[in-house]
Amino acid sequence: MVQTISLETAKDVIDASERKAEEIENPMVITIANSEGNLIAQHRMDDAWLASVNISRNKAYTSAALEMATDELAEPSQPGGSLYGLQTTDDDRIVVFGGGYPLTRDGEVVGAIGVSGGDVTQDMEVAQTGVEEFEES
Image 1 (spheres, helix red, strand yellow):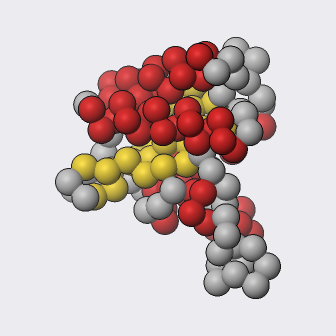
Image 2 (tube, one colour; image 1 turned 90 degrees about the horizontal axis):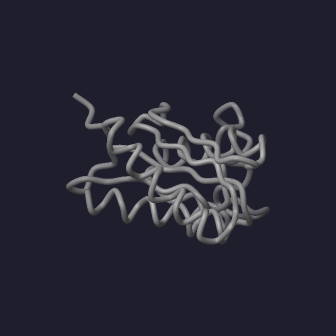
């Protein structure tokens, strides 16, 4: 059986992330996916960009599917890089900029978080808060 994240845990991670987004005064969309990249929960804060709904979901999907943070894909996916063009694969679901992180238990990816709505640094900061909440649960 594939390990996953409960809805209750996903909501706790979203709540922690939302508090961070409120602290930095930037509405976000926060997505939690299972280890296969499928949606567990998604939350769109008031006034968050509509485009961020799909972007955050794809960030979570990318982190789960590739078992890595999305920001680690930025450099190798540039022209001449070993993963150039990666973002055009998998039905255009792969995101190659920051804001997505795998969530792990005992060294195994059990889910992922994706955050969108600010600049990449803000997305990463809010997502990292969610990762920390997950690790403490």
